[in-house]
Amino acid sequence: MSTSRFDALTRWVADQHGLDATALTLAPAGGDASFRRYFRLRLPSGETQIVMDAPPEQEDSAPFVAIGRRLRAANLPVPAIYQADLDQGFLLLEDLGDTPLQTRFIDTASVHEHTAEALALVSALQNAVDPSFLPPFDEALLRRELALFPEWCLKSWLGLEVPASLAALEDELTRLALSQPVVSVHRDFDAMNLMPHAGRLYMIDFQDAVAGPITYDVISLLCGRYWRFDASDFDALALAFHARARQDGRLPASVDAAAFLRWCRAMAAQRSLKVLGIFCRLTLRDAKTGYLERLPHFLDHLEDSLAGLSSHDDFARWTRDTLRPAIAAKLEDSP
Image (cartoon, rainbow, N blue to C red; front, side, top):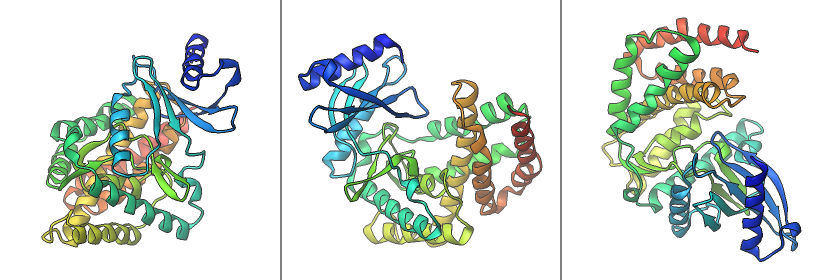
């Protein structure tokens, strides 16, 4: 962040509080995979707030503000947006602390406990928010997400040919995603975007929310960065969500356990392919660090999901025999 932009940010924050800029303390409070940066503001009273710097030429904060206010109006746990200057890309937000949910993943029991709590929040989001105001997660968007894998992981990073078996897999993953009930989808419902605060679990980074498949956020959580559930635990958690969704009407009774688990496995494959592509793009295009080392974890998620989609054995074999060794060799050669 340039000195001039930081000075402008400091002046803007001071103006919002009617204070002299010298009375403020702004300390870095992390960043994410985007161009947004965060600072913790400490006011003379001792109160803290989060300042978001989202350069408008790189980040459009209008969806964050609109979606955040809609979610909060629905009594969902999201940070309050105190002030927003979209022209400059400056926002003042409620401070939810520094401990995302994964910091509470201590052992198997704690992971299960907090994952169940987070899945209840997925249900609350789907029940409380009409998806019609959100952009549609349509076939075009699904295809764009899937295209990240061959473009950035296979061609740009690994230099591999795209296997012929990928096209049929992409077609089925798209079909199964579009066959699901449409709900409000956070779209990155990972433990890192869930903040325990004041006795509740809060959602952050919801600016990419869409109207999309009922299993998408479930899979973002169950196939996230910090844990790999075995097949029986995955099925148990997914089916607990399935039972709750049928009970409250989000799922029709005709969607049985087997059909729901197939949706989940297909969504897990779709999201794993997307993440493998995005992490390579973040590294190659955006010069972000620390993402390539996470590829084997999401490759595990991909192989787990393919095991539940037996009609794609050719792609599963290619993943095991070609993709996994290529990623391992590339990582070993990386500085």
